[in-house]
Image (cartoon, rainbow, N blue to C red; front, side, top):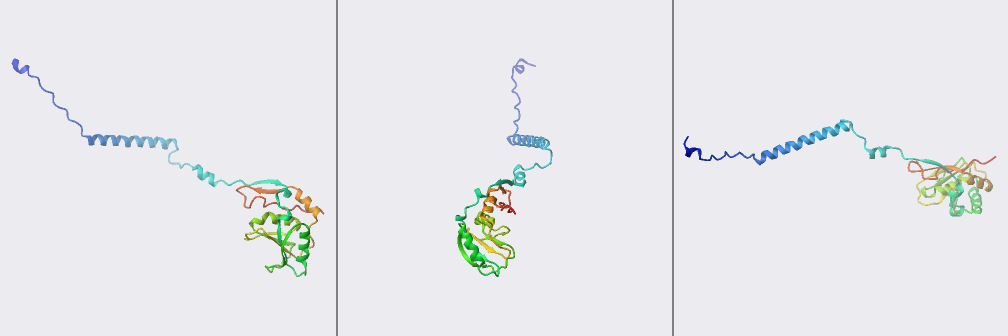
Length: 209
């Protein structure tokens, strides 16, 4: 080899550059593989394919609480002067509604109407106390004056309570017995799980004989 040939510097062969689209594909495949590995690990820790309970759905499926407490009716029921009553005769006895209305008026109740039962019913029991949702507490108060009466709720919008006096009625409960019964605690249910409104379970205690 001559001196001239050895002195010539050979240029290095240029390296081929990898296309950008191939790099993007490689990166995308790597991301997919990492995601699959992460998903598989998370499923292992969560118990595989076992569905997890939704805490919100579980809370909704649990029954709502309904508590029973002892209350004093005299403290939670309205006074008679706040109760407007319609007195009806549901029997063939003449003057029954009028006589009953007089006693209720003497005890402080506000008398709305007096007459024959507009429902033309023949009540065989002591009485039917008819009321709407807004008159529930007023009906409970009247029940202390008519031991054995049946409480009947209807769809009326007002607070007026009807008393349909029946064939088994003889006289109103004595005021002393009513005061004693209303001073005696009675069970009352309250809470969102109750089927009735708070205080709807207050009822007169049996009269002493």
